Figure (tube, rainbow, N blue to C red):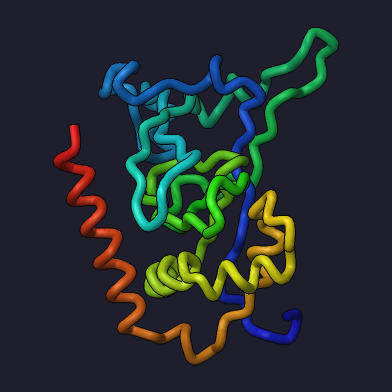
Length: 200
């Protein structure tokens, strides 16, 4: 609602126009060439973790994207007629911690997951950014059946989890400081991260 305080920023990310050309699995590139900041991309770090699809609460980021010299090659990627093909969007939000979710609906629920700092998020994996404490609250709330029901009321076909609809999901102001929900959400994330750490 326009007259209510903003809780988060909801953004679309990088569309490379050719993922086969610009992305790799992290184990396909030398680990010393993987960076987690814009500055490092000017210091020999060609690859940056790239968040796309994933599971709710926690998902291991397996892809890296060629963002050498702040995405120089992607930003100049054109077709034979000279038309720009790639679409880097909302670059000021790259490398920031937040939440991410897949645009295409694969199951009848949300799949919000924590987006660690030092990553770039894809156009098909929208992202949400808020104050640190609110991130954990929004992670739990976003994965709830209530949030999914509110979303379905706005988008009955539920084909795309578009940022326009997600940004309109109502949140009761008193929930913003719900410490118990924040703690439970973070605990769920930490358990899944610990499980994934031991999963080869």
